[in-house]
Image 1 (cartoon, rainbow, N blue to C red):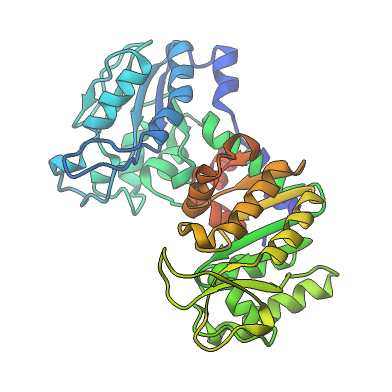
Image 2: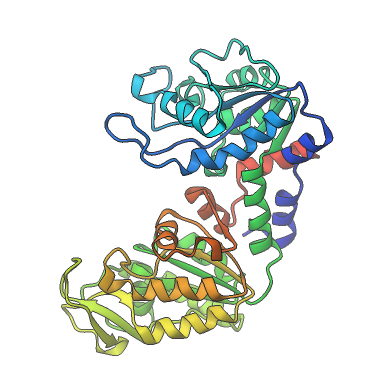
Length: 407
């Protein structure tokens, strides 16, 4: 995992678009904004949830207010490079953005050869992932994009872990490359949580499989003061602690890996709390009968679907004493109300805690929304994959290239 010093370097050393606008450096300049406008749509192409579009508005409005000629692009869905289809179009996104900005946002289909936009106006450039060479960060394509602008603004944290032409390549060749307000906020929050955290630093890592988050667990075990595990991951750790888990979801072949994480934490005087009680059922269903049991009383036909109230209370007390909390994943099957108690208790503890808290991942955001604690979490990360890679200790391509350009 990155040391605090190196992580802090990559996060703190970057140019902020807000500073360029405040200094007047963006006036009459051609500004290319890479946003994350990859919103869900129904079968008819109608946008069903527009959070990402609304989140992109501050950066675009900032550029317009600064007197820039603004170009915005994003990926949408999984198009085939070089084979545009109507369902790949950003047309619905441009229409919704126009409603939010209170102005017309023209959609430019073929834009690599040049874009006509005047200062104080904004256009949307059609789905960038349709361009051949986008995913492989083709040098020629990257230079074509960079030639369109005076300032490149990366404001799409959800793509920060990918080195593509519209996220990384263009940043290499644009006259100026900087972080938009969304990306800058992510970088600041990650720096506060991981590079220079207030102690104790408690991480919650939950999910169905240890294998998908093993590198995160290993990386965090050398850094955090407490590592709370939940879901199928907790079941594997219960096996490592010598407990029976019945027919619960787990990965027996990763028990040794779990033991290594426990030993790593113990060697530092830290701990991975193993559940002392659990909520079980005989079937995986919303109407299954929930039974609270001591962790030592689980039988062969039990499914563990949540941590028990005793465990949840102990973990909540630990979170209330934390200085920094990193949260990725609900600790039980919170979609079923009978097995949502653990996640609800954890969520409410985080909301009440005075710690700096940063949360990320789709299921985590769903839990935050379910329990209405959005305003009580210090920072909610917008990028699932990118957030996980930061927790793994990886240097995200976006952070790397913006740091290089700033220096």
